Image 1 (tube, rainbow, N blue to C red):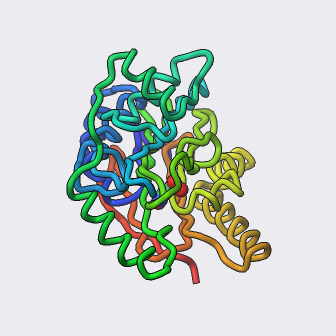
Image 2 (spheres, rainbow, N blue to C red):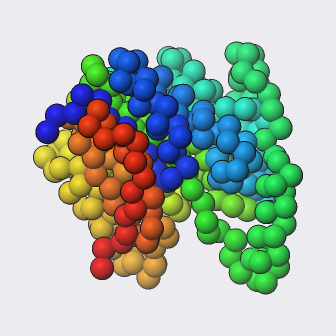
Length: 294
Ligand code: SD4
């Protein structure tokens, strides 16, 4: 069935953003606007500990953020990694997607460019995130356990009424990540990919494992080769998980959401209670849960 417009997003935290973006799409706005506005909403909300303002700090106690944007009609993309003290990484990523060169900027270079372009500087570390950091530090590193768990990236795919598909991601990455660590979220093909002639995908979970499978590109490739969104999402995660088990005897958390050019969606995960949000002209923004296959 062909949708007029559609949105799908990772995690419940995307709900408010998806809800407001659904009005934009209903009014005929471009999907790029739906992505930047919805992700900006998630970034600005201080209580989401894994994205934007209020995001959790790295090992050194600094909030370093990753974000990306891709326009599936032009294949233009932009991304920032390890950016500090800038209010909305998604807006910087989107603006970089309009450049012919220098589409991915990291750290100081990304910050300089953002300031030059007039984006807002902001201290992204909140007292609440500091407290949480300390608590989690004591519970994990303090007890000799790995801190690298519990991490959510917002990834949103939007198709507008002219069938333009755009995708965006934003995250503070792995909790306690090393300074300068870059995850899958700003890496084209891994954390996100969009081609309006085929569809789009975006991933969340352990970046180091998601990158091994070029997860988002693989989902889109499988849809190009004829799979439905659900088949493509399942097959990609099953194959990746199998590969990881073969080589390492284990796999990190892996989840993916995708959409084809008709606005039909698919979701796959290897965890329980992976929440995601869908909105189309037929269903208002709704939160669903997916579980790993047995
Ligand atoms: C990362 N994939 O930086 C991100 C984190 C994430 O759900 O998505 N967590 O590895």
